[in-house]
Image 1 (cartoon, rainbow, N blue to C red):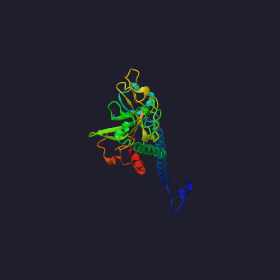
Image 2 (cartoon, one colour; image 1 turned 180 degrees about the horizontal axis):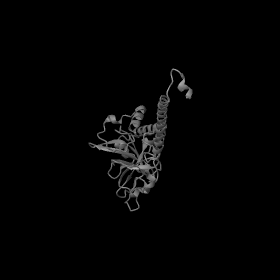
Image 3 (tube, rainbow, N blue to C red; image 1 turned 120 degrees about the vertical axis):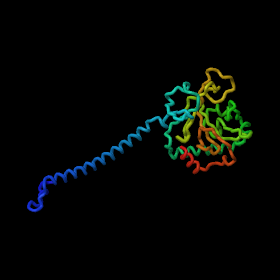
Length: 277
């Protein structure tokens, strides 16, 4: 503003320098508030962007990270940087993907794995325990796992026609199928997460040698000190409607009813997996 405006009517409406300075100060304060608001907005935007980028570098659902299942306040550790033989015994979940970030392709792949596994089991007749035994599935260490030696040693995995293990629950004397379990064919291999974070694999660290032939999940001889105490990575695909996910590591299954075997349609499957991811 020019001084001429301060005295626009020199005879009748003369303004004082004091009043003018007061007006200028008020305008300057308003301008400073606007500038401050803009700076705060830009800073917040930059900080948010930085936090997002930083989060991607944290050990949460990124390549080769693991944590022990069942620990209340767990922390992720880099799988590639830990000595598995030094771990406490237990089950460790492993993943290469950030939780919650599921692409449409990964979701489709997850559905395809569930759908193909379900269809193959029905086609093979393995919902009946006796048929599975006839086809070579035998109990492993008095567990709920029934393994097939030929499928374990065929160097294949994620083949719905040849799942390495089937899971059966003894409920009131009746053997009821829970689902299938795929195994990697070497303890040094990482399971392929076809469904991204939806299909996280896990491995076991045992307290003692578990007789794993060539690092696989079956043996018909006595153990010796050279046998590993780490299992290959494995992935569940549930035939029944699992209360968590159709790929859940949890095996805490209560009573299985006939309706639990009803196949989940594609839309409901996708909704369920996204909701539980």
